Length: 433
Image (tube, rainbow, N blue to C red; front, side, top):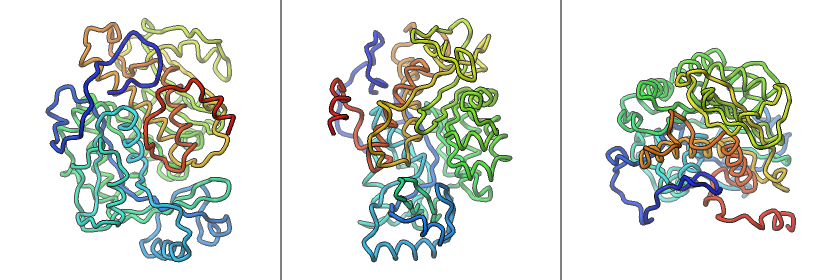
């Protein structure tokens, strides 16, 4: 496993020789294998440049995600394909993007659960999905389906805002009996998306509930990404009980958070959400991101950075503390941190899709790193109690912030490589562009 982030530390990870990937699936039986599992509605993103007038004419609400029938999707796709206006076709899905980025960052395996077309031909959607997914994302547990893969028509307007129209295909076909129980039980985390709540009658919805139950019983952290503000508004009554019952980590942007609890202030919103979950990741666009969590009072560490006061006085006082599950704290204490966009954000934002998922991949990397280090160095002082993260809240925010910057600076929500080893001259090179 790669070390999460780049910093000087006395706690080093064991280093092993890197080699080729084996086709043999030994994730479960390798005692020191650390991985995360995610349930995804497998999609191929088809990116198309459009105008606001086009969105209005087709009845799409800008910035939101809607499901359309296969015929409408094919009509729109054929129209822009004929004109040569398709910008690209990429593997997509919020969970799929996060798993890919996790494996790129950590150099560790992840496992994708979902449904894919059983007949894959060179050049088709499923083929493109496989070709553009990290080899460390294990796809051997996918459920084969007679239906084609789902498609997400991604409409990009001049302001770089993205609007999604989903053609389902087989993306909701994952059945409960296809869940590999032992794989979920042995994971460092189970990653889920609120998108499956759009259709409670679908097989993947019931599979998601079942997987969350398996993870909870095994003590595996359940990580939930909220998807879109429109989805949260529509499914709020179903989401809140699920979050309270199963979620340990909740990831969202400020619009999704507002739809969930009606609190506009991100810090106060995170404070309230900590009553439901153990850790909160809340991205606020040009204002950076917030991380909030729980820590036992005896394990609190005072920040060495200047104290800041917003809606909560000196909210970052304990940001050098590591996050824990509330249930494992004797005297639980809420901790917070906030960070502004890395270097103020990219000069040119090429992609607003996936920045939040990229930040979540960094958080997952740190959670997995904690499990890995506890396995290989169990007597380390890093494990004097049951922490959920390897790093402090403040350190994780820096890492997540940097990964988000990388995605915002490129056209794809998926990283093609990890972060640069050295960034001594990054700022100078950045401003010289």
